[in-house]
Image 1 (cartoon, helix red, strand yellow):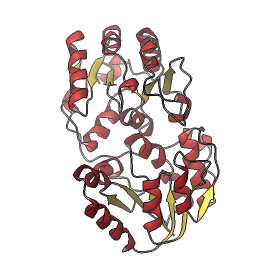
Image 2: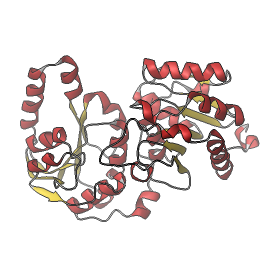
Image 3: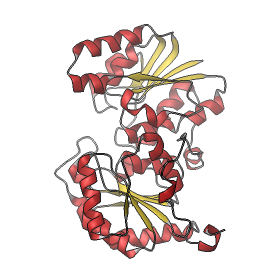
Length: 343
């Protein structure tokens, strides 16, 4: 069976969808699974042995260059592909729905107009399913796969999942301590109201005895990282990382702390302890809570259909609460066993 999965962006959304791959392969070990993703994010998927081929779409590049011709060429490329048995659009946006429709297939699967943020996307599917848009995104993703492939991925399956991000090399080994807990701070986010205060990150690093590393991905995020270091000189600011090295770094630390953003969700994918901070986005929907993957939410009531980017309630989360939960996660997972680390 030839299966095409369409999830073009973004990092966190791709990760929340990738979890289904291991369960599809368990049920259909001989299936061929190709994943369609924006070219800029193919690194998230690379080295995953459940994917036969990563099919890249250059939409972000075309948009940046304002090139209609590049868009047209990408669409033409899709029509020339070998036919799939089914195409599953897990993203359910207009752009992903068009891609799904253009891929030659016997079945094009997505959600109906009541179940997607962009209801018009549903017109491009030959099969449509219904599920509440406000439900947890990972449960929505597994629902689509279960229906499309007639399998049964359960909540227990997700809890017991195997790590599903893979990398080639690790260039940041020098940042990892053998005698202290390694704690990665990810202060950046896709928009301002998701960003936790600089002073609070500094306070967290001052209150916990650990080796703190700060990640950044843009000039504005580098500025945030440098401001945290000014307040807490012991933290280490990394150089800009490739997606491969980002996955490697997260897999080698003991705890990840940050807001609702892709690199923090990588911790869940790698079965690493994490604390995700939520203000203007819904924690119950955008995360999968486990014993080691915890969330702290503000008191804000969030509408998952329309995010209020003027909601800065994440700033109300107390650093002391993050410190307390961090220490509990580190202790529960025996991360502070320094004698073991030194062997």
